[in-house]
Image (tube, rainbow, N blue to C red):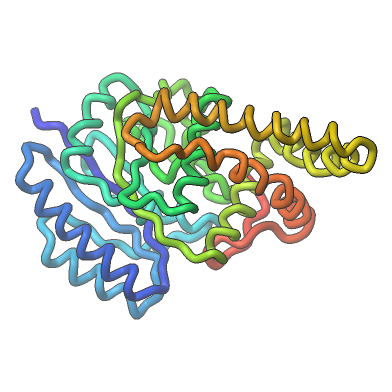
Length: 320
């Protein structure tokens, strides 16, 4: 019996160029998968502006195994989770691969991760990028740092899971910001076997503006509220450093240098262990990634105490 997989892509964009590029990629992926011995379907949960919906509708008509839906149930505050939930209602296959719309996975990569479903109920892998811009290297440096320091590893815009989890336990709440963590923790609490297989990769692309990059830093800091100890440490770092600078400048500078070195060393070990396909010395950017939390954590705390953080068209207060 052939393995079957549903590739679920929640999309929310107002940029015509971005949507056009995504449509061309999905058409190519559909043709590539059609030549492989795998049963598949691509489901686009489209929450774009109304003038862009037609592009996906035309694509679904010309593609071989693609379903285009516009989610109607938006009762959750997280529109991405609303889209995933709506898409799952249409799935017919054994496995789900839920990916953000910046992924550019290949048929070979999909076939390569299929055996992992036999070992794990739910898992995630390492993303690889076609271009290593500064923002990509900062994000990946943090990714490798978390892969060493956090037993759940770092989330990176995708989750692979067995359809049996949803059929048996339903879907988690759709009101929190940290969507991947919400999904993984919900099924982990139900007893699902969670994994992070080595030497498995999914291709992605990332081209974002400076404003978008800064917005992401605040949102990532807000997501850390789901981990109180981690968030508390991030909050303490800036005032402790300022206090040290006011009392003993030389000591503060030495400790800051040690801090940066340790962050880089941990990220280096993460890249060596999990990211052997990544050629650039990404770990060098780890201090930059971690330093952003010194400020963005305070912004996140302010937002949490007021109206929450913006995500799509909604403001979300719950981190998880």
